[in-house]
Image 1 (cartoon, rainbow, N blue to C red):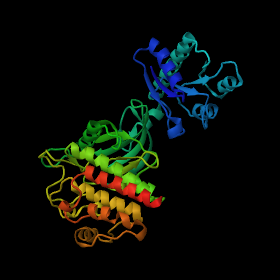
Image 2: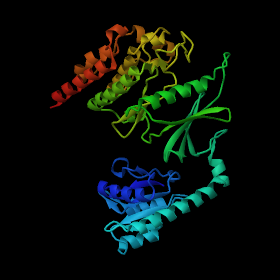
Image 3: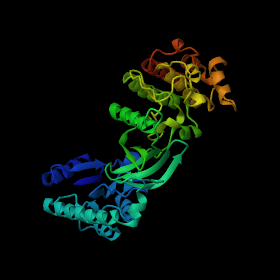
Image 4: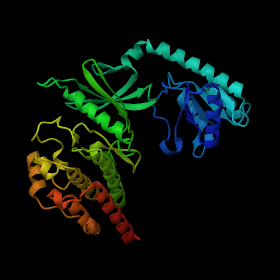
Length: 416
């Protein structure tokens, strides 16, 4: 038994768990925080659940309105509506709107509750069995030219010469996820570099379990392609967040989160080497997670996914040593962090040019740009992050985070 709980009252959630666990000791419960994340995404069908338990009301939310929306989605899982009573107007309307069953919160009848869930589970299993052999299901497993069972492809999100990104629903994860797909290609040594990069990205995210690092669900191979299923961020990346403007205090707080994520990476012996706004994903307005570790480097491994001396990454965010194909250490990521901080503060990149090689040249030779006068108190911080020589930067991401926190306190003091 696997249930999605849309219920605001922690005590009632515990009561639900108690009732269900008596009948199904191994039951799995997944909560949806409607206050924090809002309505379930319109593409979501809860295909990985036996039933959805929906509360009748909560602060700022109306269960009947949610019920109307969810029940109208073709193929959505059975919805058990949690009303105060089963004989009031709300309960009657819930049945009209498509609730599979209605349970009274005032006094939960255990046997009735279990009967409703048992029948809901049977209904969902029949519904999913019919759907899996349908033409629609077969079409939904197609991610471009690749067929990936267990995922329902919703739409293509983005793509380039290396990989394609798709929004999908995972039955196993019980949520919307992003599937990254790339052709499987072997080099002269017989090593599949596409799979090696995906494996690296998956292992980094799986090993760290850090709130500021993207969560990866599964790594696999299908139809001569490698695929990686990972966390979906409906709020997009930091680049989108920056288009609306980022205040100085928010910029420092976001940079602190990036520093914490980098420290977790560095503690695991890994460099990111491609830190840029497009690889910083947003959980709401002011929480973030780093992603895309395909170019990351583990300091203790002799195997290099990229050739020695090769210039890779994004020129606007490269450290001088990285841009010139020299040896790099943890301080190269701190330089990229400094570029992003400057861009958040000023609304523009520190160095620009139509020629990528000219940008790389400026990172090594051009003076560090000045902040506007109102942000001059942050100039020393930016200078330290964007120092041309690694030895002149912060020694670690911990030191950078500490300096960012001090700068934030100073900025708040000035504002006060």
